[in-house]
Length: 88
Image 1 (tube, one colour):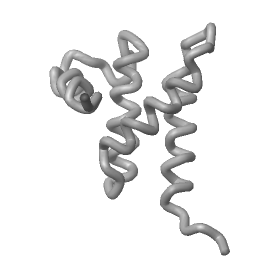
Image 2 (cartoon, rainbow, N blue to C red; image 1 turned 60 degrees about the vertical axis):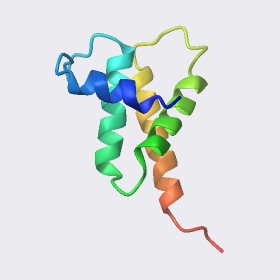
Image 3 (cartoon, rainbow, N blue to C red; image 1 turned 45 degrees about the horizontal axis):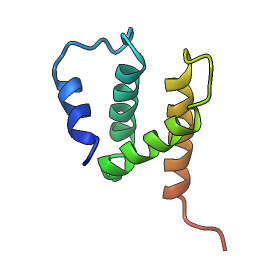
């Protein structure tokens, strides 16, 4: 089961606010969209997987306010590292 379809459905519904997401899930949908636009050569499934892994790393956080920002920053770093050629 791919998590991409529900993400697309929510994003396409038009009921979300980019600047004032109602919850963490909405914010993460926008993180996926932003990363997809800034890394168009990377498959959306890969981006969703990386975002999910980074979100899992924050599962024990008691304060959730900045989780989407942390997830985006760490996912962006991973995507950038994956693009760079390995140093020999």
